[in-house]
Length: 489
Image 1: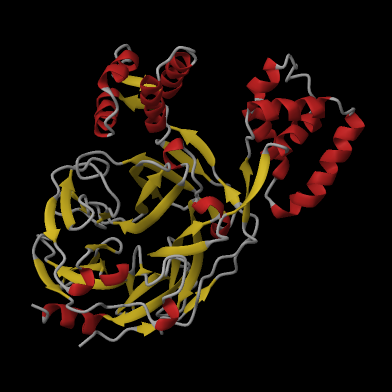
Image 2: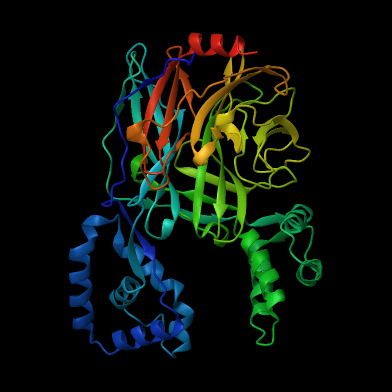
């Protein structure tokens, strides 16, 4: 007998009106032609054209003029190679050039799916039984490029969700690259990426044990400028920068609403998308839980790179790649606290089975141990997690997903020992959630999927995606769920 699930009637759907101003580069030759045409305009024509552009787009973006200037700065080298004095150009001309290097991108025009949910840091001014929450989504737009977006809401005593109003001036973060790198750890990750050793040595051998980002990038750029460079060496050098660019901080303006902050692909390692962030409040050794962390998958069109992102306020985010033999595939989920003094992580390194691993560092993962294999028909293709484990007095509750016949995704649940999560206490024989008839159609049919749940008012609050297109949520009574899990053996 299945555990009763209450589906709520709220639905998060794609909104094509939510756009960001994105850098647009149309190739060196066309860019040179564009700049040359703008340089033929007198100052009045420049100002008139710029003012017309600002009238059309300023209301749609936060401080669009600064975005234009930033994008003009990205092609400064091209401008100066045309024998144009960059410093002598007026501010208006720079902004106009930058406007031609800018395009609007609808971040969630195609889908808003694979949600996770965490408690908001701010729990003030609430009624008894209420909880303020932040829900993250994978938003997908043109070209199937994915980013992370947020919604804020309040769960009431009956587990109804009131979603806060959405802002429309989407804000992309300022990027601050890590300044110093540890050579040993950097080389280890390059080795895991199978970058050719002989080309690594040519660049890395003269660097100190702690080296600067700018120094590394300068050395690589010099090597790449060699017109006789072989393609395999070029690829290796690009992978070195690809990895270096994977460490960075994101800083959002404090006058932005959380619904206006989008974590958009920044580095080359994630140029084709940021996928399936699993957010969780992490409880530190002293009992404080002032950090929210998430694993996600960076994708560049060819290779995936598992990453960890953390924040203490949802304004500043620190991004780092994950290392080690256990960080080699999708579906990583961090436990919300250490177990016996070590970080713990779920993974699926072989693409089929669930694994568990432990580490002294949140970014280094080795020696994964098999935890679960497909057992029931609805998960015969593969199993995986649906977000970070949830602590309960009875054990670690892990929401899972299984893939069965016709590539049908269902959501299940398992219970593991608190002190030794390698011990399975119970596992639902039937799915907790399967696609209903009105949930089967979408970008990817026959899928229900989640990236994280919470427990509130003794209920499981489970946001989930509907066929890779939209999202909603369901609630499950915890007593009924735990009882079913303990009786499932």
